Image (cartoon, rainbow, N blue to C red):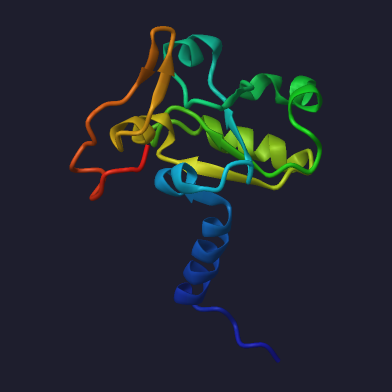
Length: 142
């Protein structure tokens, strides 16, 4: 007979599973080119305000209808939205998972991307802010 899981066992199992489906901003920035498709899941106005260079724009509400034309089936996907106060990327990750894509959610969203001093593309060009010392302990390689 299998021993019932206690609260610590349940917590450990949950956290192990959670970490399989999340990725940190700096891990995204440091990832090998082509290892995944980075997808901005925000609305057009948010994309226009600024987005991660090289990201594909695919708002959550349009994933089902447009994914086939933008992202090859089976591609690894990393999704992001605004930041920790927004669960839009969770909804997007769920949509990708339900369509069979290997998917991870970039925790912190574009807010923490920018706060780490990483480049943001705007209509005026690429913008790089000074890193926020409360967010990052090292200077990113840009």
